[in-house]
Length: 78
View 1 (cartoon, rainbow, N blue to C red):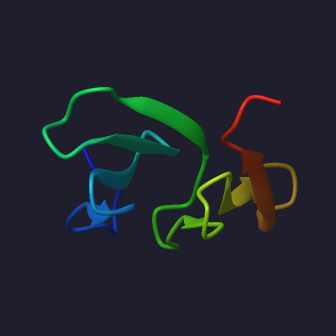
View 2 (tube, rainbow, N blue to C red; view 1 turned 180 degrees about the vertical axis):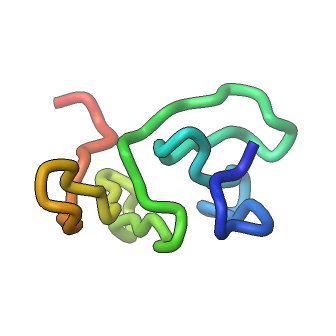
């Protein structure tokens, strides 16, 4: 299920869809296979990727203060 205020999934690239569910960015193939959980994310803000899809950026809640922070997650094995 989609976290509010999302009303639909968005394309990550031409083959995968992206959405926030249960407070985490989720990516799957267009047919909902190969589901991957990326990182915590706020559903009101889009997840962004580097042009080569080696890293993802999301805004995440900071529970102690109620503020947000920009988080970067590497998507490749190093």
